[in-house]
Amino acid sequence: MVLASFSPLSSVARLGARSSAFQSRRFLAQAVSATPKIQDQAKASSYKVVVVGGGSAGLAVASTLSETLGSKAVAVIEPSDVHYYQPLWTFVGAGLKTFDESKMAMSEVMPEKAQWIKDSVASFDPKKNTVTLANGESISYDYLVVAAGIQVNWGKIKNLPETLGKNGVTSNYSPNSVEKTDEFIKAFKGGNALFTMPSTPIKCAGAPQKIMYLAEEQWRKAGIRTKTDIKYFTGLGKIFAIDKYANELLKICKARNLNVNYFTDLAEIRPDSKEAVFNVLGGEAKGTQLTLSYDFLHVTPPMGAPEFIKSSPLSNADGWVDVDKETLRHNKFQNVYALGDCSSLPTSKTAAAITSQSAVLKNNLLGDIFGDKQVAKYDGYTSCPLITGSDKLILAEFSGYTGQPQETFPFDQSKERLSTYLLTKEIIPEIYWKSMVKGTWDGPGKYRKLFRSA
Ligand SMILES: Cc1cc2nc3c(=O)[nH]c(=O)nc-3n(C[C@H](O)[C@H](O)[C@H](O)COP(=O)(O)OP(=O)(O)OC[C@H]3O[C@@H](n4cnc5c(N)ncnc54)[C@H](O)[C@@H]3O)c2cc1C
Image 1 (cartoon, rainbow, N blue to C red):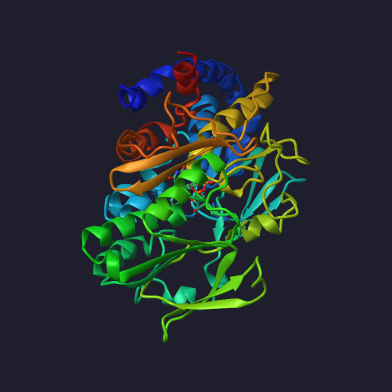
Image 2: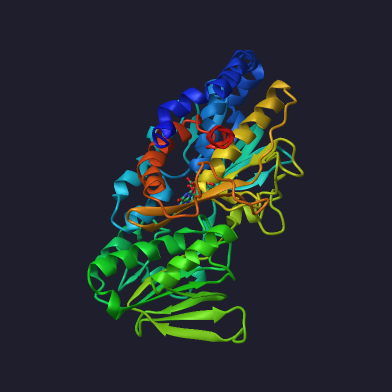
């Protein structure tokens, strides 16, 4: 029953009210797009709204905006031919889904009424309302939405780029190596298995450990667990930010003999001797290095703000697009918004968070365009499905702003369950492709109210 209520079709129907609000604005939009200004703009590479990035966040926003504002009013600047549903990569790395299921041609998911500019943004000039593309062309806008994701800094770990995908070294964080994770887990014959998580912000902070639980299960089933030593290294001081879930995860690690180490950041891989070198960031050994041999090494690389944002007037001191944490509007430039992994929003960076963020952003940006003063506010909602086996999962849902759980279902989500596993593996991907990238899924907030008020 619970799962059935999550079907994409019912979600679309339940979102009817919001869609019709957006659609009523479409009449107004016809008037807007009929003005010479917009038509001239289209010819002169100028748009009512320019969206930078056609990932999870960019498409969720561009779909609704282009539907509401009409053809040629919205451009999406996106260099990639392929759109990935990255949350599936944990399943792909464990051989529970195929890589093909995680991807779609960009042309298939790009909103029909949006103009796809197949290039990268090289720089921003928010005072002139323009962005410059890698090919040197300038694009101007009335409103800008930045949704360019996080930058994965492979090169910050010595020897990682040349080692990745070889001799037991892998990562679920790259489309080029995620299938290697499955291959290496299956080929493993026992020995030292290391899993790492950096001290930097990353996308999906649970993914570095999810793959450890899935690998451990496979090695147990293959009868090699007794000759396998599994260690988890995190650059942070906790296994998970929210205590309610961290406590359960620690119990699982203890029961399954998974050795958790804090304040240890992978710095170097020595492929010839098959050694991993860690910087110790805290405790008595702070400032020293720890060297361990490995037979299997799953790396979560350091990540950070994209360089082209960091060097722009849009960034805050840490390089993220500097937006108000509730309205998602830029703190200096009123016609600029940002969401998703590249934004300064102080919550955990996930696709789930984007479901709430995109609804708020669309409301507020369309409000600017149509003079609607009802401001929506983002509450920091995010979620991390902590897969702990091939039939169970802890569904962490919380606000990154309050640090408190914000669970949808009327049961304790910190307990491992088959139902939430199936929801994450089979139903949420459907919602993603059929509803989220089409702009009609704004997260489980409505269901939470329903279940929690019952
Ligand atoms: C292994 C793994 C597991 C995960 N598991 C989960 C999970 O279980 N649940 C969950 O909710 N989330 C999960 N995530 C996180 C989720 O995938 C991201 O948070 C989400 O994709 C972020 O969306 P985004 O649009 O901000 O960035 P992305 O989806 O990464 O999209 C950014 C887009 O911007 C484009 N771009 C980059 N630079 C430029 C430029 N200069 N100009 C124009 N375009 C540019 C890129 O090509 C890309 O298409 C996981 C991620 C990984 C890698």
